[in-house]
Amino acid sequence: MSPALRLPSWLKPPQPDVAIEIAHRRLTVAQLGRGTAAVVTAYASETLPDDAVVPSLTGRNIAHPKVVSDTLKRALERAGIKSPTRVALIVPDTVARVSLLPFEQMPARQSELEQLIRWNVKKSVPFPVEDAVMSYVPTTVDGGITTLAAVVSRRDVIAEYEAITDAIGAHAGIVDIASFNVVNTALASGMAPKGDWLIVCLADGSTTILIMRNASLMFHRHKPAADSEPLSALVHQTAMYHEDRLGGTRFARVFVSGGVGGIFGGGHDRARQEIATRLEAEVQALDVRAAAALTERGTVSPELLDALAAPVGALLRERGAA
Image 1: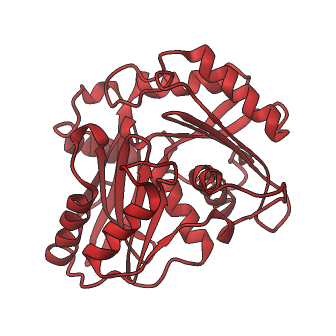
Image 2: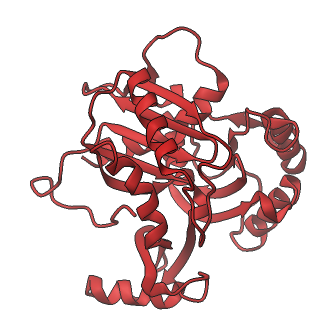
């Protein structure tokens, strides 16, 4: 997973200008231009067979590596992206477990902090924590308590995804989950308001709901579709948590990303309607073009705009951290 430690600029490796998202039934590539303005100069999204990538926290994820790597080559060729060597790799939320961990006192040494995080998350993951790869980042500091967002995944699962980029000669210098980078797009778009706001990420096979307070992550919940819990129930539970545990009232803004392709038996429009009804709030689609312009290549479909949200968010984050 991507490291939480920010290195001094003279020690940093070159920032990737290409991002690759490998999702269930879809593979997307995007490239940012090198100018000061955020412009997506190349992009493409290709469908994958249903059984090629099956996101899982513990099982095998990529059943047909050659199919996926061939699809990646095809997407890069169609986008006009030639021989990327360092890329940001976006993986499904389903492959990781996110925990928000409060600490009254932070250990002085990074090694001690990592041991403490592993001790805290070991009961929440269905595999030995020794087999995990982990990243973490501070999300809030309030009243002397620092809360870290820790992301844990099985090392061999992440290796499956990294092997796809290795097959084309590209090193995945950054590996991150999709929902975090959809949030990055929202933050870069200028559409994120002050106060508390909600973002619902609808993927093909799962749902992730995040509560943000300004630019800080306050809540993260991921549910695979196999759990068969209605979207309205997830939103209701999240709203109750917001009121009871976070002292919230109404969300200043609500975003939905994904779902255009017909997820949840009605797709994006139905999801927006369900959420708006429950929260009594206007629900907006997250448009990646508010964060980065797209080079004109004719009409861009809503499905493609959805597909670009996470990979573009990863590139914008790295550019902002440079």
